[in-house]
Length: 112
Length: 112
DNA sequence: TTTAATACCTTGCAATACAAAGTATATAAA
DNA sequence: TTTATATACTTTGTATTGCAAGGTATTAAA
Image (cartoon, rainbow over all chains, first blue to last red; front, side):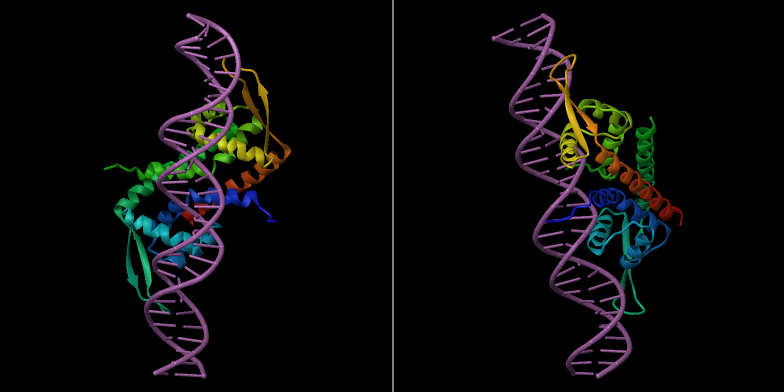
């Protein structure tokens, strides 16, 4: 037997579609590395775990949206700092538009 | 060779998370059947196709969010009119909250 | 009987988030 | 030197989901 929380699933689904958008938005403001990104997203109540974030960063790097550099850490292994590229900024602009469209669509459906 | 449009994919991803929410929202206002739902969603620029909608309606029915009745059509086979249940309305309220949270999270990430 | 207009449903595929486990690096303590 | 601790990066297996494409079924008119 297992208790299922459909609403948790829904929230997870809603996050799914905007995760890439969130990552690019954060990196557009300043370079960052995985654990710091996770912390920042957590603060915005947009929960992400390692197993989600790392493949996503690699995907965006392969698409040419991000690059990275290595940087020493005060403690532990070096950090992979990701930086947004010009191509990434262009993609982000389109994502802004896509997001606004979705928000408008929902409003239309709720009120129209 | 194949041309890929990452932005179209992103938009599709963003829609993914809110489709169930949209369906419930529409049915909360009035009963409807699949082709009419597709038309209404299309008008709100929230594109859905048959192969997506039918399994989704069946899922929501199995979760107890929807029921249905048969109704004659002026032309062609009878229509399956879906109706939201009390349980569906309760779920919708939680989805409203989940959606508002996501919208706030994005705002926080963009501006904070 | 055939055609046209609708409507409902299923199958196979690709993309994605997640849980869990694994690997690696640097420093301090034993 | 060895061990422990803290930190960071990566991979694997699984479940869910939307979609393209194709299939089935019903009604009425030609």
